[in-house]
Image (cartoon, rainbow, N blue to C red):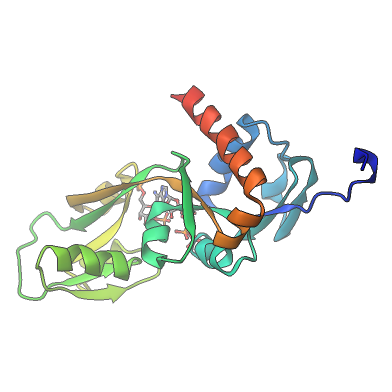
Length: 217
Ligand SMILES: Nc1ncnc2c1ncn2[C@@H]1O[C@H](COP(=O)(O)OP(=O)(O)OP(=O)(O)O)[C@@H](O)[C@H]1O
Ligand SMILES: O=P(O)(O)OC[C@H]1O[C@H](OP(=O)(O)OP(=O)(O)O)[C@H](O)[C@@H]1O
């Protein structure tokens, strides 16, 4: 069959996180040669065709990216390792994109003293519970959804587990990083079925991103 008769290729569905990661992810994709319009951040549209890159972006809340990919409504997605660990979904982790770097840490007030069964506030209850369990420390984990640094300041928790990037939020609130837990960057993930059915396209994207990342260092 001549290429003129070929059916147009189905768009690769990409769960893209709105917010912090988006700008860095789209810059990386562009560097890898994908033609992505640069005005996408200005729109309120949630499903955006990026035909020149053969993609469709599903603009997702970051925490929901692994869910979209696990259910196969997105073939691939970009997500922070923090969210990937917390959500623990059944997806393939294909590539460390090295973008949106930060770290997960245990944080507290400088005069913090150990207490029995301390309360730990966090957006990441699974990650925090596992961390303290592995160290044989019994804690009560309290799930919050934002402004986690408030918790020790207002007496809700003894410590928090949260992200640190520049350290500005800690400094502004008189808190200290007690234990860095692990480094976080964004990852490219894939749905297990899509990875098999669209292997050539997904693998070729990975290869292009890999080459771009190697050239960055
Ligand atoms: N300073 C930072 N604070 C939090 N996450 C950061 C930071 N720097 C990089 N990241 C990475 O960016 C990802 C997305 O963060 P972002 O703040 O956009 O999402 P969010 O926390 O879900 O925000 P929102 O609740 O406003 O949607 C995080 O999962 C993490 O991997
Ligand atoms: O070390 P820094 O550069 O200060 O970054 C870390 C802060 O950024 C994030 O909060 P975010 O701005 O996402 O607000 P939130 O607490 O409401 O989630 C994170 O939860 C920390 O509070």
